[in-house]
Length: 342
Image (cartoon, rainbow, N blue to C red):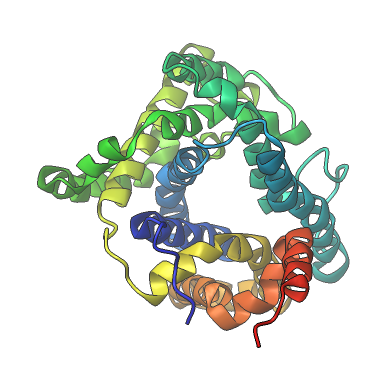
C-alpha cells in the first residue's frame, strides 16, 4: 500500500478523510429525506462540516501565489475537473437518472460541482486575502451581506457566505491548531457537539435549513429582515465551534490505511455523486419509504462504505487519472522519458 510522504501532516489527512466521508453521507441522505430522523442527521452534519471543509481548504492554500507553477496546478486540479465533471454529472442525472435538472452548464454549478469553482475563485484571491489579518473581520461583513445576493451564477452566494472560514484557514498557523490537542479542548468538544446536535433538532424554530447551505438569498428565507443577519452570524459561530470541536477529536497520529485514504479526497468528491444517483434510480428511496429506520441506517453505513471504496488504493489508481488527466499524462510522459538504469 502506498503511504503518505513524510512531509504530509497525518492529522490533516485524517481530518480530510473524516470530512469527505461526511460529504458523502450528507449527499446520500437526500435519498431518504422522508425517513424519520434524516432531517436531524442532515442538519447536524451541515451545521459544521462545510465550514470545516472550507477552513481546511483555506489552511492548505497558504502557499498559493500568482506564479506559473501554482496557476498551472490550479488549472489542472480544479478548472479542468470542473469543466469535465460538471457536464458529466449533469447529463448522467438527466439522461440516466431522469432528474429534471436545468440551467446553463458551467455558469451555474450543479449539485456537488459548486465546490470546485468556488474553491478556484478563493484560490485566485488568496494572495490578497493573506496580506493582513484585517481581511478576516472584513470577510465576516462580506458573508453577512452575501445573503443579499440572489443568484446561482458561479455560486457567488456560497463564495461570499463561506469566505470567513477560508480566510481563517489562511491566517491560522500550526501553532494555533496545536491547541486543538489540548486536553480541555478535547473535553469541551464532546458537549459542544452534543449541544449542536440538540440545536439541530430545532433548526426550523431558530433558523432555516436553507441557511446552512449558504446559497439561499435572504429574500427566500422566512425570517424577518431584522434578525436574518443575526441568524446567519449565529450559524457561522455554531459552524466554527462545531468544526474545531470535531477536528480536535481526530487523532494526530497516522492511522495507516485511513490516513493514506485522506490523500484521495478528490477522487471521492468527484465520483460519489454518480454512485448515489445510480442507487436512486435503482429504487433505494422506495425501500427506505417502506423501512424508514433501517433505510436511514443502511444509507449512512453505505455512504461510509462508498467513501472507503472510492479512496482505497486499487480504486484510486483507476480513477485518479480522470481527476487530473493532464497531470497524469505529463507524469506518464516523464516516466517514459526517464533513463532506465542498467
